Image 1 (cartoon, chains in turn brown, purple):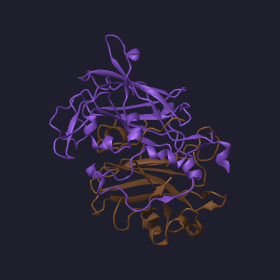
Image 2 (cartoon, one colour):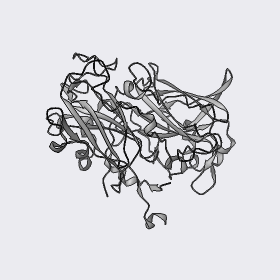
Image 3 (cartoon, helix red, strand yellow):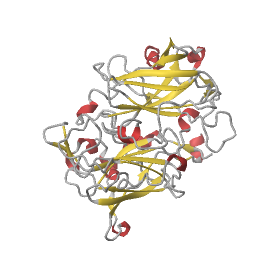
Image 4 (cartoon, chains in turn brown, orange):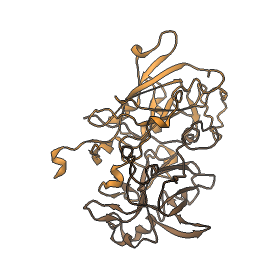
Length: 195
Length: 233
């Protein structure tokens, strides 16, 4: 068995290669708008800030998300016939000077859980930043989902910390926004998972 | 679809979130206990960026501008493998680095070394059917940083890989053999002793191109191995 290659911090200088903006050279961007013409379901925005232990904005983080489509299916390139086939389910965003990030996507459907029972709709998140030798995994749940109370993963989290995983719905213009701040450390530290 | 398992024990090759000698981690590294959770369909799937994602030439960092960048031209290549040493084919490999003088194009980098108008320092490729990748670039320089008094980063190249699932996602850094700065680097040093050698590429005389470029080999092993009968119990 081969030992895995260790993780190293993404550092402060990834933007020209990894996130669309100045000097970004790629024709096929990996970006923060996941919506495709064929994507069914409710259009939503995810908005948030990344903060350090002092509550100071982290202006050089990269957030990646991975989610199911509105019907609860994960993208699979071998299956071009399925609905939402163009929806990749993956997005990437760098934080701005105020530590903010955002995604335009669709609300994911429920997907199967560890014992076949459904998990409440959720989005996986990987947080990369200068100062993080390895990325941190967390999850976004949605404040308007009744299924949260029966979700098998949320149930593993101490009740007083579950709130850090639940994005709060706000009505903005024509589509709802879910606010999900990521507190890397300190009071109200976001729950991160050992996966 | 290939079913892989991702033993948590393999992560002992990584630094923890907090690496105290690396100053930036002190205010940013999560400190509360991580929540151990089973791997569900969400974790066991992941994005697929294949050959349609890249354009010919994306892996050649020496030809992205009108002229050629200054510096020592090098080939950086290797295999992307899983924990069973099986190739990981058709997976996106992203790369970024500073120029030969030790300066990144990023606006935040204000190190007093020249920018090179012919070098962005960003590359992309997709592994072939045998899990191989190759870039043509120039050797990055060392540069000072503010971690501690007279701190210098050893020459390094940043890599980003996806692999078979969201759990195999990896961002890492490749170093060069015999770099005298490596023992002083708190980022390299954050990795457990047993696994940190895996971050150092090897000089490969056989892969050099005479009168053109030296070559460094950097094999990358991602999380994931085949399920054994024992795992299903």
